[in-house]
Length: 402
Image 1 (cartoon, rainbow, N blue to C red):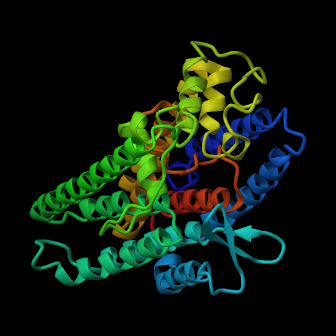
Image 2 (image 1 turned 45 degrees about the vertical axis):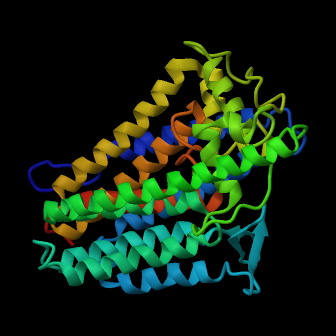
């Protein structure tokens, strides 16, 4: 307790995190119940325990320490991303992508460390800079832009489009709370609109390409082929977007690119109000929701099928509480750096929540973003605990206390 009886530790987020972790382990077990080698729930317990210990350590450190070492943390994150390159001796390729490095006892995904380092570095720049009009803020904006664009590019080239998409909302949130001129955001919105238009034109051209191929070979159920474009995105990424906006074009039979999305929506829709019951879901256990994704990217579909609307609403409520409480803590921060950290973490989690849950119910494209504290994965689980540990540190040291 602080003098006056104010609590030193925030209990809201830790309680929500514990509940989500328990739910995650339970439904990872359920998703793999019918699989012979389905023991990932045991590893998830290990990662959660390790994450809780890491959370305790990070939250006990005065967040101002991270301000002093921001450059080193950021550089470490970038080095991790560079080690995923195909010429790196410890780079690991899985499913056509190089997003992992082998550290001996396990593989880790440097993207998660890069997110943390980028947030800390950007927050440190903005905390040390005088932000006002765009003209007065050119140098800080240039530095923040570089800090975000470098890891975004490296992650995009792995390729990992989904993870690269979490950076823009985070940087704009940081700039917004820095009270940057509204002209910047109007200009950014205009650029964003142009980028969407260019992407839309590219996707339309790709859809026409598929239609022409289908006309040439009407027996093809799922059409693939080379499509040349000036945009540095791959056909499988275009397929994911088309699966969202025009599934009949890319996968008329529903057995190719749109299969996962369709099965995820079936899982969520068939849960009803109260669900089919714990361990009684059929989509994952019968293999309709593929084994490779049911326990990680599409864990929310398993939860929705077995617990229905009420269980899903409870999970969404926990997520909303974490984000809202993080924003509250940002308002209590003693300085701009603490506020930036809490806001950045909250927005990062919000993006993951919205995109992951959205793709399971068909309102966002499938991007492969996991769900914090619920999806299976070591690097991601640890990064979530570290990020929330930073928020707890901002709360603990909101007073002039050391």
